[in-house]
Image (cartoon, rainbow, N blue to C red):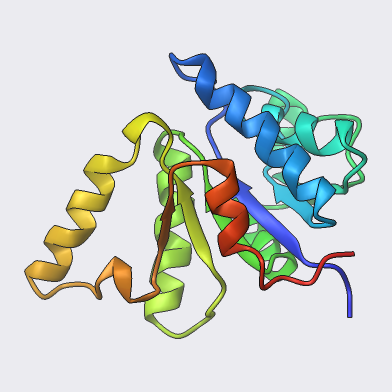
Length: 184
């Protein structure tokens, strides 16, 4: 059995609080120390770059997946364990899903939310049953958690508390939710 890998979604920006970036670096290092590989969007800036730096600096595996057009326009990190260049965002997300055994969302913008909602939808449809965790730093995802509760209350979505999604407020809590994964 191969070691488990965790897909991390996060912004290409760092946000307004240093705690976001610090937690991303700590998460990357913690994954590596647990023998869990990182799968992410191959970017070198913001939250994505920070989680990758934490992983690589701790001696971990970092696999980046990026669409060719983005690679040509923005350039991926050059120090990755493996770089996968694909033709579209759809192919990127499918490849990241295939390579990963769990998903974590760090603070981010539209792309992070889109990726998070896609894997949530796939759980709802029965396409996968992989853990999904949001790292709710400084209450960043409180409005989203409220929205998910509202969707459930209105009868449009399962309750997040029914195992659809785990909410963690620290890197240690994220690791608690990942304890079922197979380390290297």
